[in-house]
Length: 160
Length: 178
Image 1 (tube, rainbow over the protein chains, first blue to last red):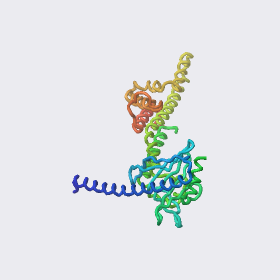
Image 2: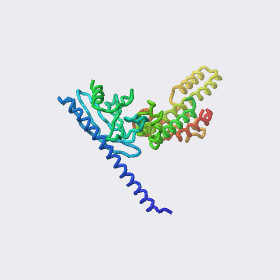
Image 3: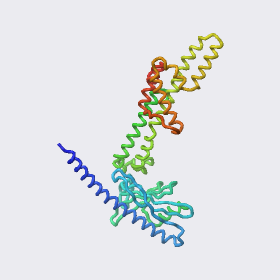
Image 4: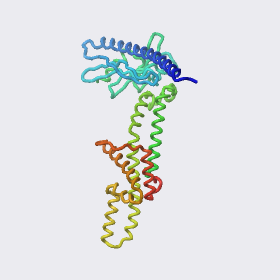
């Protein structure tokens, strides 16, 4: 019969293993978000030479059943008395889309919402052969690959 | 909702389904076949499990208090109707105009007056404890319905409230919950 000591040791070991695994997943997700924000910042630097936009990062809490509660960065873009943010929603999202060159929908490996709380676009992350591929979903038509051109079009729609 | 049983059944099924939805969100949400039709359903496709968990927990937080308000409101309406019908039948037998006037005033009080005074006359027939238990439900209902202001009365849970209210309905002859 299992003693309390054995039981607690077993539970603690399992919990430690799960925590270590989750830490790795959260770290990988955090890195992906930082790469995304760096790309967006690069686009904005190139497109906003007069520095009309104010861009900063803050922290946001996420709770996911598989990962528990954790913090990740969000990107805030402000200008002309308005704002829009890129807010991570979930690493294990229910969101699905057709990744580039795929014929069947796949579950995304992360979701970030572009939102000002009144409107929303959704970014879905997929693992590509050369790193992350982000798709942008305007919730009306099929998601398309995120690039500078369509990101700027989306951003303009929030500052009109 | 016309009967106490209707109100109780509403509470039980609402709470049960909120809890089921909450459990689905917490334990199985990401395992649903999102690559299939559900992933294209606009009602669901942007709903993450944690959104549903948060919303159902917000609903569950207040469902018991809301149930007390609903249960007591239905109970009050059933009691007033029943007593009013019984009393009106007695009034028809009264011939003296002064007594008829007094009885008419009493009927009006049954319809619109203090509810505590409607049930008060049933106390002497060995029901004082039950009436007081029902008054506890009423005081808790009033505290919830008036925005939880002032000192909180002792909490009454929906099951206890339903049992007490059902017992009083039987005592006054208004049936088991109907």
